[in-house]
Length: 156
Image (cartoon, rainbow, N blue to C red; front, side):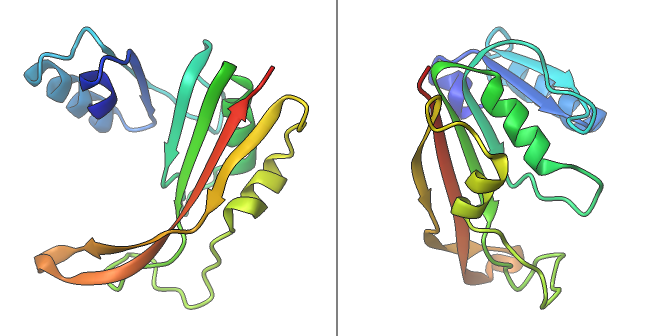
């Protein structure tokens, strides 16, 4: 919604019909329906068609069967020249998170970039870091969490 409010034309994809319907209603209620296209799409099967200037994959971590590496590689290949892929992942678990597995592993942005295995002649990693922030959870509870941020630009 923020991107659409800034003038971007947005294609939002989600596997959940409920999420897609909610976004359609939200875009309408904010007068942004002409800037937001929603598609119900299973990224496990394919990637939405088209060329994009920006692709955002925020917290695309799931306990379900999803080959994230393939999805992110497909996203990078869907970028237009000078387009950017922004991947923001959990780098830690908040105390209220559904995933309290002490053995949970959060690959670093550099590891994610290496797994995607993009040709450096065509793609450049512009940012790969792990900023910390104070998150607010249920009941106003706060905790310091780490996010993993990876920004890749298609150069050719």
